[in-house]
Image (cartoon, rainbow, N blue to C red):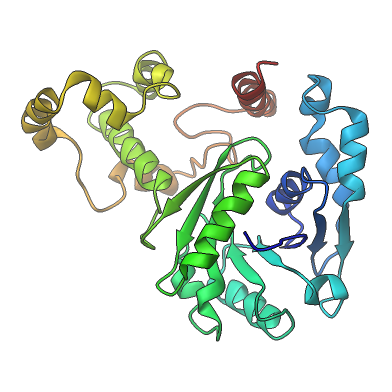
Length: 309
């Protein structure tokens, strides 16, 4: 693996700070967050990691040590930018902004610096379209919350070379992530394609009156959702046998939602202003207390699953 020590995070939002915290787990890493606006890096990271400290996953001493390895700059001409070995871009999901960000980086960083874009939906090939050294560019999709979810999808562009892909895979492993190599730059990459196939069917079941939202979610949580961390779909297929999988699909696939357009139910909800957490109503009713509990319960669940704390 290339000797990666100086890591630059472009963007000091929630995801950028969480990525910086993860990268700082390796003692020889020097991490810099760049943002055009002043960012309270320490305060943001302490807020994100509060439960990790409270549950004893990370000690206060370790957190302080990791924070000491993270710097912040608003100077695009700084040595921290120019001497970066690897960059993770975590700016807003705007194609023009991402292209502009990497154009500025390419004009300042070394030719062997590896560029990574943390986009959940945008094509890394399209983002890197105008760069000169496109072979050193990959997608690195960190899942939110970035300091807890293990998966990072490493997405090849149409120009990524093997050395770059391999180096980024090894780097992600070194910082404690579970990297998944996506060999083709396709919409949704790997996990979002799988996730939204499930979402499409779940919404369709509600739309068609087969079951209400609470019943759909309850059914998932108390059946295959419970065993997914241990028994994934393709393992399950092998367990029951290819013949049974084929026969089930031969019968049921004709009846599963296969629309290529968003559900009319979602369009209706948008028209009615039902925006989920943002408006207080979506498939469920939400107030500030319920929203806070949902977020806290998710973090507690992830910490319990990952660290047995």
